[in-house]
Length: 415
Image 1 (cartoon, rainbow, N blue to C red):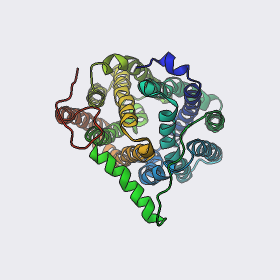
Image 2 (cartoon, rainbow, N blue to C red; image 1 turned 135 degrees about the vertical axis):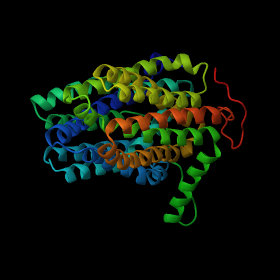
Image 3 (cartoon, rainbow, N blue to C red; image 1 turned 30 degrees about the vertical axis):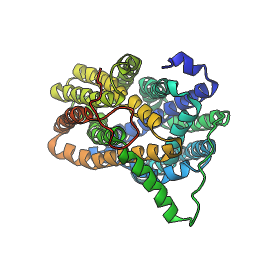
Image 4 (cartoon, one colour; image 1 turned 30 degrees about the horizontal axis):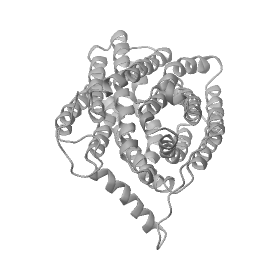
C-alpha cells in the first residue's frame, strides 16, 4: 500500500489533488455564504433552509444514472473541463440574486452539471493512480474536502461580515476556472468506451444503465455498502442540513459558531483519514464503512442529548472522525472492484442513491423539525445510524471481501 508521499510524487495525482483542493475550498465558501444569508439575514425557516440542499441534490438523484452512461463513453478530460467552466459561469449568477427561488434554480443547474463531473473525476482517479495507491489517493481527495471544511467556514464568515457574500461567490467562480486549467495539464490515459453496435437512442442508453445496475446488485459487498450508505446518508442529512438552525435556536448563537462547528467536523475528518491506514490493515473496507455509520450515530446522539456548545463541539469532532471511515473505504472499494468500462455508471449510481436519500431527508427534516423540534429529529437520526451499523455488522459477516463475482460469500475477516 503506497503512502501519501508516494502518490503525491506522481505528477498527475498531484495536479488532480490540487485542482480538487482549490475547487472544493471555493465551493465551501459559496455554500456557507448562501446558508448564512438565508439563515441569518433572510431569517429563513428550517424548511426554506433545507430546500437549498433539495435543489442541489435533486439533479444528482435524477440525472446521475444517465450521466454515468455518457461519462463511460465520452472523453473524461474534456468532460471535467467543460463541467468546471460551466459551473464557474453559473456561480456568478449568485452575485445578482437574493431571491430564494432564484437561489434554488442556480443550485439546481450547478448540480446538473456536477452530475457529469463527479463520476468523471472518479474515473480520472482510477486512471492516474496505481492500484496500490488508490486508498492513499482517495484519502488525499477526502482531505482536500476536510482541509477546506476546516478553514473555509471561518474565512467565509469573515468575508460575509466584512465584504459581503458576493466575495465568496467570486472566489468560487475563480476556483472552477483554476480547476479546469489544472485538468487541462493532465494526461488521462483512458479512452472512452466504444458505443454499442446496433440501434441507437433511448434503448441503447437504458441498456447501458441496466448493465451498470446489474453489476452493482450482483456484487454482494458493493451493493450492501451502497444501500447502507444511502440509508445512513438519510439520517446524517437530517442532522446536517439544519445545523445552522440548531445553532440559532438551541445553542442561541450565531454564524461565527456555525462556522467553527463546521471547521471542527473537518478537523475530525482529517484525524480519521490519518488513522485509516492503521485500521485498514486489520479491518475489511466494508466493515470500516459500517463502523463509521455507528460512530457517527453516537456523535449525533451526544450533540442532541445535552444541547450545549461544548458537547456539540465534541460531537462535531467525532462526526468528522467517523465520516472518514465511510467516504474513503467505500470509494476505494468501488474503484478496486468495478471494471474500468463500468466505473462511470457505477460511480454515478452511488451518487444517485446518496442524493435520493438526501432529498427525501430534506423533505422530512424541515417539517419534522418545525413540528417535533430539532432535537427530537436529531435523536431519530442517531437511532437510525446506530441501527444500520448493527444490521450491517451481522449481514457483512457473510460476505467475502474483495470478491467481484455474484453470490460468493463466507465469513469476512474483521481484524
